[in-house]
Length: 277
Ligand SMILES: [Fe+2]
Image 1 (cartoon, rainbow, N blue to C red):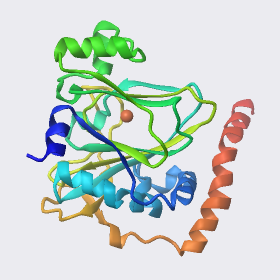
Image 2 (cartoon, rainbow, N blue to C red):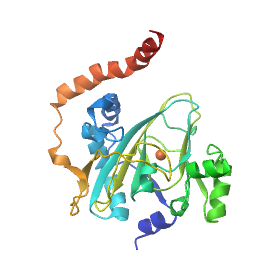
Image 3 (cartoon, rainbow, N blue to C red):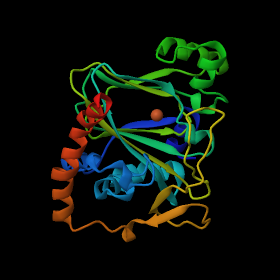
């Protein structure tokens, strides 16, 4: 077993590492303005974003992924995460991984520093429960690092809290079921992106709630992209990255930077006006 796979399987994470090419990050960030209604579900902006495909196939990311998933790899989920100052994402397990296995890559894009953290509990991917379930059962405070760690340790004494302060362009890979949390104590909105991968022998689905273990699933098939190797299973709706057609580069860039950007920034005002009238 290679050392990466060994650590990934036991402790549940790898990294931090650096993305090979960061030259397109500013245009990638523009693509978060692409309206959600243009893609199938909130975790599939990769259907419409050339930048996400470029990042998902970054040389360094792929090299590390192949160590843990081997050659045949689907990108099943992607999500830009804008975390505002003082926001915390409480400890959780991404509900999708309650149903199938895979790896999540968390990549810092902009405004990352010593006040913007990402934490995970090692070995928690091997536990047969999740913070949300413990909240229901014992009223666990999922925002409290030490309380979450204490409960995890009761189930497996090897569990440890790891907190990372990444720089833009750095990434961590974790086994899908790892319990994780993020916190922004800085004065700026932190921009990051998660990319989620699995092997083609997993059946990928769209959750319609965030309950664990009582997750409900949509009948709509989520679009995945074959980023490496082959799919010999045909369980999923798979797009080949070569077949994804983007509009002409200049037209697409103008559309994103002017039209979608304006729409994205005006959305909060529009919703406020709707509330008033
Ligand atoms: Fe998450």
